[in-house]
Image 1 (cartoon, one colour):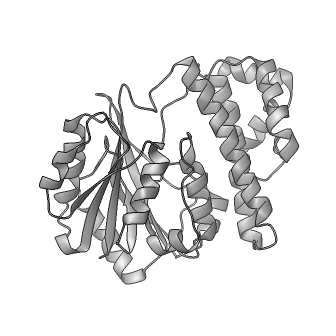
Image 2: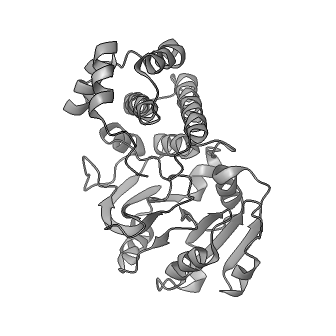
Length: 331
């Protein structure tokens, strides 16, 4: 079997899950080439009706362990050569471009094949996301891609070889937010072959009640705490693998950690933390692992300007004045 499509599910409205499933089974992929694995994360009402939708749909009831735990259960039960994740409230686009990707998977057998996605919120206009800052026409390593691009946290924008995750024991942290940042980083670190395709396959839907749309103060506080913990875990991974890493892998991890630290500072600002609170948190969490003050590096002009401002109290105050009060939705 070529493809395992894993859908983590938790209390999603039935009509959204139905839309998601229909978007998959109408892609025209032969039934013997794919399976759909829906992992329910202990919903109030598990979607037992899904197995009647098609013969190649499996339902697994998981103990509540968050999206990371649900995806891990899907990986462990998958039989396809490649895995793709689709969130239950999102869907695949009906534009025929998935076949281009499948053809390349069969022909070139990369460990990762990336694609673009669209974002929509309620009735707002759809816009394309996931474009690479630097695109590559040839097959490259995952580390090369990560070194040259700001790697998105979403695990829903690429196919990856199941064998890679199994052999390298790559799994999502469970019961924690931002679990996908760690998974994506380690997967790309290990991938020796990656294709950065121009196909647009996925529609990411921001809705009221979703994790991304939650704006409560307690939620923001936990999200920031978890984000910092994930950064620490990735730093520990880099430290543990320092002697095994080649120069590109080392630079890729360093770049990813720098970008995550920037994102963490931005999240603190969007959460309404004061300048003193942000600097205090940076010194407490990032200074011991040499991520703050932000490191001097030959990244983009935007990074270099942000670094100079975020590394002192007056610059940080100015950043808080000019940045929007809420974080723009992204994935």
